[in-house]
Length: 442
Image (cartoon, rainbow, N blue to C red; front, side, top):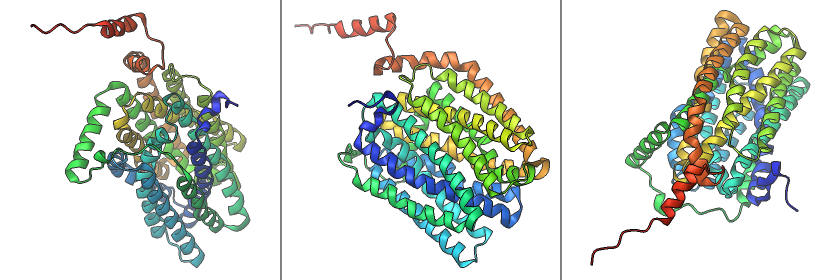
């Protein structure tokens, strides 16, 4: 029996295993993140240190993701994911031991956040490029990306909510334990996969010159094509200015809304509800054609939502606004991811997705440090307001250039069979097919 169109990528066994294992693991990840943010703010009462912890956990992606992309295009992606997930599991275990001993200090949290950041720098671009290996039908790839985003955001809904309940009931240690154990699920899922496309052995080159050459090729390819360049810059700007506001949620929950850990967890879950809605919207779309306009509107709604959130003093209203911003941000991020993976050449996929990871994750730590510094001087609400206004500027610039970018992308969709050919394009292709090479002189 065929699956509904919104779930068609689940017809691939390896992809089903991935969704199940990664889903369990991400619930633990979000619980740990919720517990860690609450713990840091309780220990320090410092918005700046909240931003500093986020900075150290995410800045490795800015420097290492491009290298990870080169390796992703050259080496076995499943083996790389085994290594990154095992490293993350060790990091979570060390956090449990330190917390259990009662000797945990802020410098230890910062150091372990940096370790996890290094693992994530290699994990994220490899995992994104791995989607085409698990769902090899190109027509199913946009759906696989959207369902992956749905899974991420369903866990983003469940994880903070469970984390807030667990923290209020018994403390943050239990959140850390759940996360450490949850990595078993994704490692087992990777081990159970079968019949993955082999990586060409001839491509497996490693060394300074090979990596450098791969980096140069990747940057030239991505930034030499205006649509890819525009999507990457859009993600970078929105992530730099908008995403770090989530770092300040403990400040909003405790000092502005006068709540406890449950309120903090609820705010994170409200954003997750909106993000899940956006991912499901993308999953039910039959085509990527025309996705640019919803992305532009989503960027504008995200910026406006941050400004509105900065003015709210009601928990219910803040939750509603965060649901809107969550929807908008996920539509922006997952939509740009989908468009990138649709237009990119297969042999450059890992490198382009590493640049996406750098734009998405690598700019967030810089923004987190900036947001923490701003919040220390003008307050958390003021920092959120400045971030929202900056996002609105980015949305306006993208919307202004959208028509020209769509024209450049359309021929790629036509060649891939994702969009019907225009009469002119069809005539050119037919003429090329019918062209007879000139006879050689006798």
